[in-house]
Length: 166
Image (tube, rainbow, N blue to C red):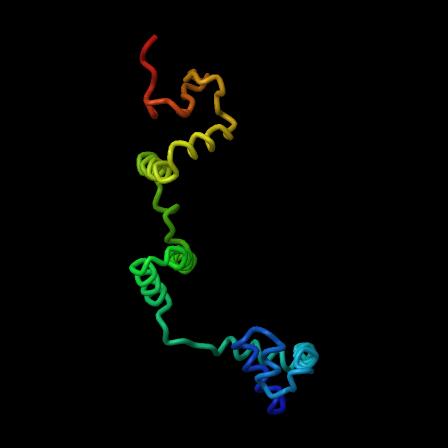
């Protein structure tokens, strides 16, 4: 059974996730908080209580709604980095509902890739393509033995179309 300070430490540790901060919050002296925090986290009873408190932790906040709200605010106020971070968090929270699982057919995948390439721009795309194993550095769209064609490179204008001239 934990004493009062140990219980306060366990509760504070769940909140702060830092043993030194939790020790300070539990009433241990600032000068010894680092040592006390370490010592308390070595006690199995304290570790068990922390785990128990974490399992009981509940929230009334709708996480997805809150992140969407943060994204909307950030986007509306020109906070690009915050908006991107909110989108990343939404992606993690939604997990299996990611865009990758919706790109099932070839046409949808190609449309998405073209969209991404347009965002990157011609120079960046040319640079990326030149790093690919299949890149043909002589600049010609030679047909490969398997019937496919090299991807376009900087200066090409027939993106994705076969060369019908012989």
